[in-house]
Image (cartoon, rainbow, N blue to C red):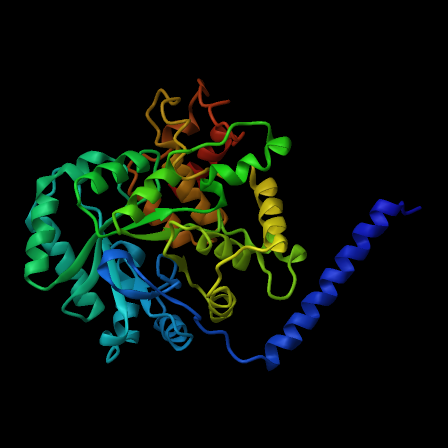
Length: 400
């Protein structure tokens, strides 16, 4: 016998399925989605599409062209993405369109790197992008304030500006020391733009509404205030990693026309007062069209909030929150737990083995010590219940 609750669940599933069929039929007749809003990126005065092209997971010029045709005008890359292939794809696709787009790239300028090192990296990016300048050049994935204190970075960016090779400088980050690094960069006027991991997973107020479900304190409460500081200084604020692991297929059964999980996540981010725009890895024409459909958002409806809450509940205990850092000192072997789990996320959630292996290799020993560890002192170190030892061992097995 089927009880009433189970019957209702079956009925809801059928309704969602029918909604999906109707949405597919409507999509065949509806005009292509396009960017609806271009925003001022702080003191740079650059006008960028509120949903813009990230290239960490692709090196396909056709995708760049498709995004451009949908109104995307900001294309972001890094020298490390696809070993330069992402920059090459952007350069190929946007030939003849340089004055219609905003380009940015990134380098991991270390605490002891020289101006010569940094200039070599920049010139390599310019060559692959087929341009004589980038609009924004980021110090990439900063999680050590010593990298921003390196006077060589300051002098390099000033020289590159004078030479016309970059217009504005920035800092990107998503690690446990993100707030410390952002505060230093902002207090010392080192950035015109910042790019940070930001989603419902980084906002304490969202989790406060779900305390009755999770029974733990919100993490990273200092990120929203530092983003407010950036806005007060008129520094442009870009969000990345807005999909909190991007397990899109997990949410398909709960979506309805015009309200997919990704669109709900984007509308939430774009409705935050301290966020200007977001960057998202675009890996197919279909996803580009889905993503762009959320452009122009200024509010988040109840249906969106319900989707986001469902996703957060599903991900708790399996998703390592960027910027948390609670587990940082728990490993006696010094494994960079959060960084290892980030690379595993690229492999398991993003299904991007190339990015995962590239980023894991950059960690040196990675999680190799976890394969033979008998201490397991990391157990219980995560306030969200992530099974650290299990996942770091898995990362080492997958990616070594």
